[in-house]
Amino acid sequence: MLDDGVNPPDPDPASRVWPLEGTTWVLTEIRDADGAWPLPGGIRATLEITDGHLHVEAGCNTGHASVSLHDDTIQIGPMALTRMMCPDLAMKVEAAVTSVLHGNVPYLLSADVLAVGTAARLLVYRSDLPPAA
Image 1: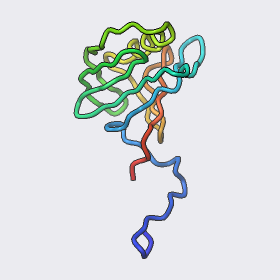
Image 2: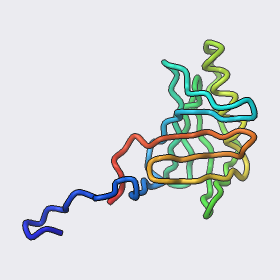
Image 3: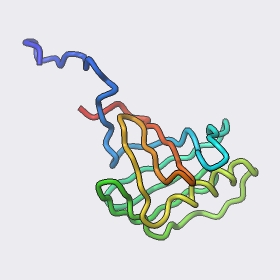
Image 4: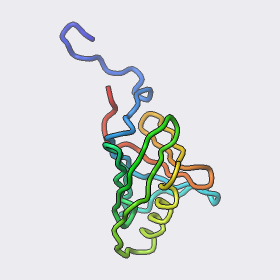
């Protein structure tokens, strides 16, 4: 801390970690056996964990489920989703999201990137908040 009470800039912002809970995570990429593809423009998919609940925008519909956090996994209970129909690309994103976000799901948190799933299907999210101090 500087004498004037202002924190100096972080010399290595990549070393800072965003909190898993309370952060809105925005889906940027889906990876599977066929490769990686960025989220199509105009489609929003997010994940947020607060107070033992998972809240999602799945590409088309929104939903929630109970969660329990462990060192490297998230236990996700049955998800309740709205039931709108959307264009094919949004439904494809939703199918990918919901295929991963159920049961005992591995995750890795590194700075502002959250990877959820396995090599068979991995959802890559980025934080939309500044890092925790």
